[in-house]
Length: 165
Image (cartoon, rainbow, N blue to C red; front, side):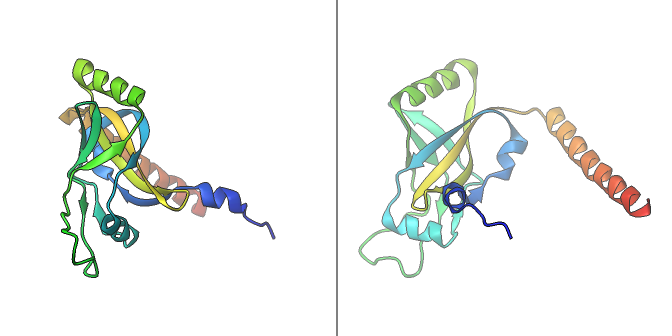
């Protein structure tokens, strides 16, 4: 029996939430990992899986990156002395050089920053994978849909031929 390497299991990110719509709406050219500045009740809610990043976007203002539209539903057992705002704008933790590079690409070349996924890193840190992409046109989306459907059909045919042969 083969043992699993415990170190690789600890370092592998555990996904909290994915933004599947982002890859459909945008052509992602680069991915960046960013930390997230959270309050205590938000971390507890994230541990319970009460987060949604589907309608979320990232913007840069005054040299800092922020994530807007991320919904974290507060737990019923949240503290009574803290006012919980489920759609609070969250600050992203990035290096100055990364922010400057992203700001230049957004302003000059028309790129958009979209959160792709949220996951745990090293067990305790919430990280967000941000995609740097450009919006797709309708014909690009149709081509992607046709290609995806063709791959599904192709796998069905291959599976059927293996069973018959």
